[in-house]
Image 1: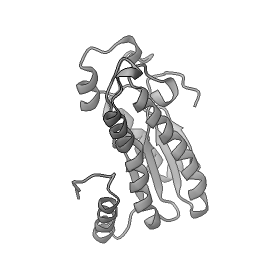
Image 2: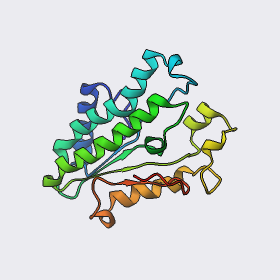
Image 3: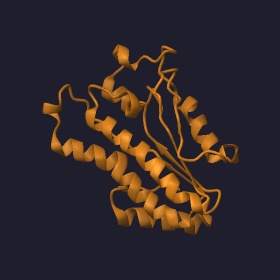
Image 4: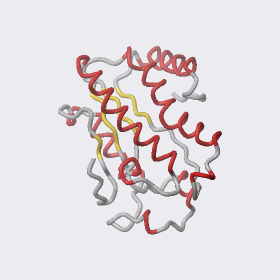
Length: 190
């Protein structure tokens, strides 16, 4: 089942959730993985419209969709948010994007506390550089030294998916408010 819409639209979120519950009888897992980025060399070059679009896409929409799904989750359900290593390391060309990814870490930890009485686990995955259409479009095939993790290559999406799968299963039953870091060996202290 696919939905075409904007997660910054509360009504769209409600409709998508209601259709999903109607079709499948409930929701057990929510994976939040929407995002955008607009590199700039200087904060002076940041355009307000692009900053707002980055925050709307990366964190505001995540909160709105999670709010719409939350009443349908039950004991054993799982919310998994996508953040980034840049939430911990920063990135000189992605100042606003990095800020949204830090907000996702805080959102994850705070919602985990709120969801604990319901038995809902809330965690996140913070990948390092990953070969995706977004990163290829943003940075092209030539990436600077920052993008090279200790393993000297960007991860594939399949390598990152294993973290999401783990967090969605009962194997992660003792994990909530945590962030997994599949980043090729970068130390992030988080």
